[in-house]
Image (tube, rainbow, N blue to C red; front, side):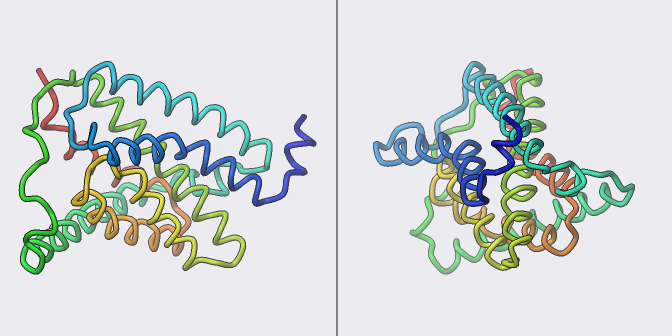
Length: 224
């Protein structure tokens, strides 16, 4: 079985990972937007745990597939270095500043293009346990696939610029549920993360930065 998996051509491998990791999310969010359902709605405890469970199972299955294809942790930058923590803090700060700058610019130049304020009033509906799980699993999941695999795979094929752009496109599509504002604001984050990763090949700083940004986003949903 492993020999068969190793003989699969690269386009098949790429399609399996991208479709397996992000296909359901992109399609479901696109359908929700098309029918004006679920966009901007408050998350529920059951729904949040379901997301965590689905991402965990997908990580195990696709991770095993990549392992059989000789994708070891060191290949995507999951070996450790004490400086990764400092870089992660720096990336989170730079991303936050970039997002605020883009949001301010849009508000000034195109005040009617993006709705002002949240789509719905934020309600503290989630336990701190599920928020921790969402933050940690979600950050690792997205960076493992969107950067660790997608960017690495395309960079190895000699297309670093394409790798960054495809990574940004995937992040945008995955965050369709956040509406226009969320989609626009994912672009600077994707560019910063993708450029850093192409230059360094270090994945832990991206995971840490994404974790901090997720924590900032979900903190308002915690019901103590």
